[in-house]
Length: 65
Image (tube, rainbow, N blue to C red; front, side):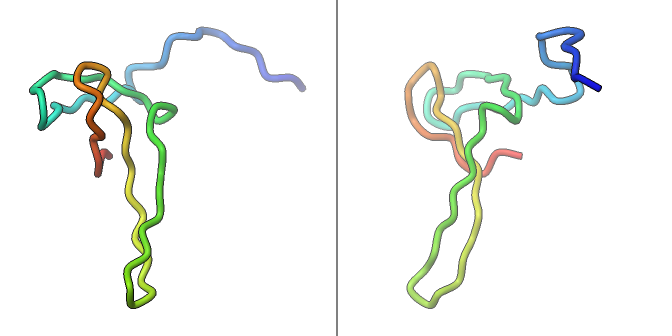
């Protein structure tokens, strides 16, 4: 069975919103826009965070859901 694309626009269930803390722009994003990175501290502990760039000011927005 092959996968068929029914609609290319993202479904409203996966579209999320946030406000950029740097410029105040309200942004809509989908899970495809988010990149996940791993931060390792000096003790060896690891923490994963999500981020994407604001298209208005270019600053990184972290800890998005």
